[in-house]
Length: 283
Figure 1 (cartoon, rainbow, N blue to C red):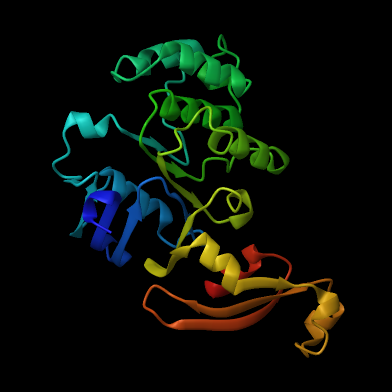
Figure 2: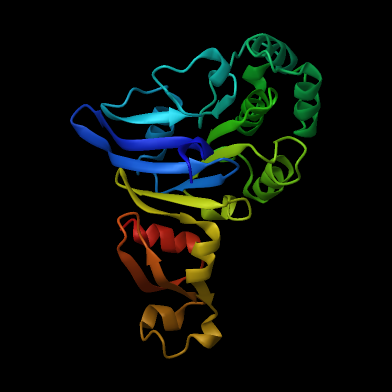
């Protein structure tokens, strides 16, 4: 695939925070139109990587290109195609929701005020309410509106639903990123999460981080093909662990998966969900 088809190209990225080596020689590419899950436990380097990808943090070494331009040299025409939602939104607390939309909209030539207002109402935000009076979940929704209103081509989202009720997360992600009204089909999205359950119905690719290293890079179809859930009733005799026998757990079977270095991962986990498998891979 020619490089022009890769929206994100990251090569040998390293970054330190003081004496701590946070990102360790991270390399990957992301093709246009992908929905990428950047997964890993808390502290694995996901948020730091996202900030380096967007140019908010300057890496110590390595390169990042977005739409073929280095993040160090991006012009305005490229920047306006990109959106970023931080895990903790940086908002203006003294403005109302509607005032905030109008203030931010002035910075984006592609911004549509009607679209911003419609999306805010779709997410059940009160337009006249002060941002300082919004709940954590509603502040996160406002940050999502600010990111999507100018119809970006590349979207970075750091734990975008972390502050929302777990029962509402799936519905929100479905309405925003699957139904097709609010995000262009050809847009590329990178989500960070420590919970696969929040994203598994959206993804086309997975990047799995562990202690600052990219441990696993693959497409989601491949993952589902080689990572299967064996019901407990069918797993009798496959695992002799007393823990497995005494719990209502299924058996996760990783079969011929390869990590980012090409090493084969073939393991079985007594576990209730795929999230438990990713947690075990971080141990």
